[in-house]
Length: 179
Image 1 (cartoon, helix red, strand yellow):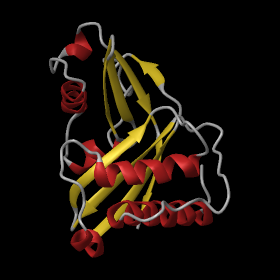
Image 2 (cartoon, rainbow, N blue to C red; image 1 turned 60 degrees about the vertical axis):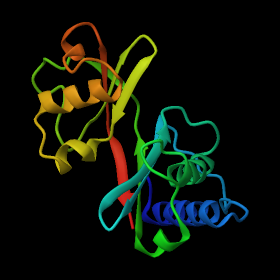
Image 3 (tube, rainbow, N blue to C red; image 1 turned 135 degrees about the vertical axis):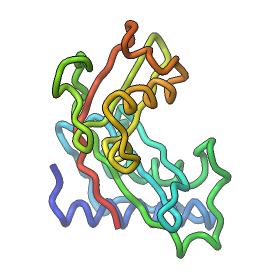
Image 4 (cartoon, rainbow, N blue to C red; image 1 turned 180 degrees about the horizontal axis):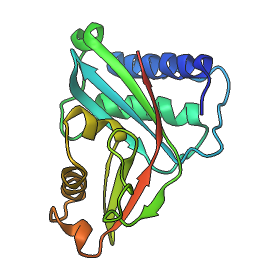
C-alpha cells in the first residue's frame, strides 16, 4: 500500500506527534497530505521496551491518513484507558508501530481459510458492541483462529463464543510497519 518513503514520513509524524503530546508542545503536522484509497482505518501502537504501552486508532479515517496517524499517536500516548499517560522519562524507551487497515470484509469464520493468523485482523460486532484486534496480535501470542475470535469477542465486551452465535465477523489486511 505505502512506499518506504511514505512509511518513514508517517513514522516521523507519529513520533513527533506523540512527543509533542507528552511534552505539551504544539502537535506535529504532516509535510503533505497522504491519502490511501483503500485504507479503512489506522492504529498507532506504542511499546516500551517491547511491552504494550498504548494503542488506539480508528476504523473510519476522518481526514488524510497523515492527520489520522498524528491524532492516533497523540491519543495512544495520552488516552488509552488501559494505561496512564506516557511520561517524559519514558520517551527514549518507546517504539512505534503503525497499522494501516485495508477494507473490512464480512466473513463466515467457520469456513476454512476465512481467517489466517498473521495475515488478517478481526472485527467482531453485535449491535453497538465492537471489538478489533490487529493482525499481528494473534501471531505474537501464538493463538489459534478460535482463540483469536474469542479474544476479539472479549475486546467487544461480548461472551467469548459470540462469534458462533450471531455476531458479525469482519477480517482485514493491514500494512504494518514500525521503527
